[in-house]
Image (cartoon, rainbow, N blue to C red; front, side, top):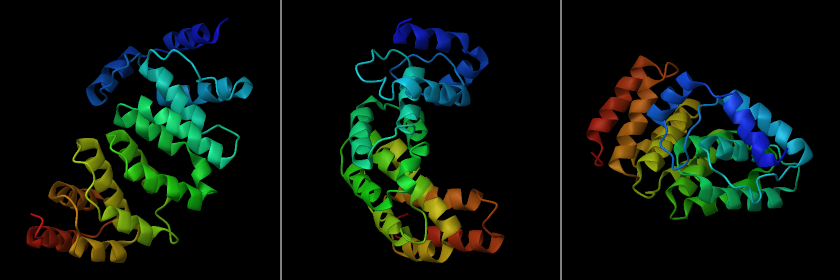
Length: 232
């Protein structure tokens, strides 16, 4: 059986109409959705990459789920980190929604063992003009770089005005909120004099205040900062 037939058969056998209807409400893509759940796709991606790690090269992508399989497969690559980065750069133009973006980022565990080189790639992503490439960099920071070694570097990158795009701004505010939850004092200092978009600032504080890991006293303080901010 040809690879495309194998993948199409698998996807259609695992189609879940209720999940499809749900996904259509939160994901907009140029690729038609079939409605296959993420854990099923992730498991199948491992099977695909066993015999042909780079099966996606020259593959005629038609469905959202095929791109998701591509995203998951990148996390299974057994190669040098430099080669992985080149594979990611080939993948990036396929991203046209937040879900494809975040599926790929979350599975790139290779960044945990290649922090320095990975950080250089992230800096490259954040300088690009394609919205989902910028979001890719922000989500990689969120997934792998909020730690003792990189928190100051992450906050410095947070203090930047990126392209005015909804899904970039959402990732930016999300990143700031998790920085606060894990490193409240350092992030508070950043929030006292930020150079970011007002919407991002407000959304970040809103997300922080939604967290159960932040005390009521801290939330009140943050809301006062929000009101007093010159960004408002």
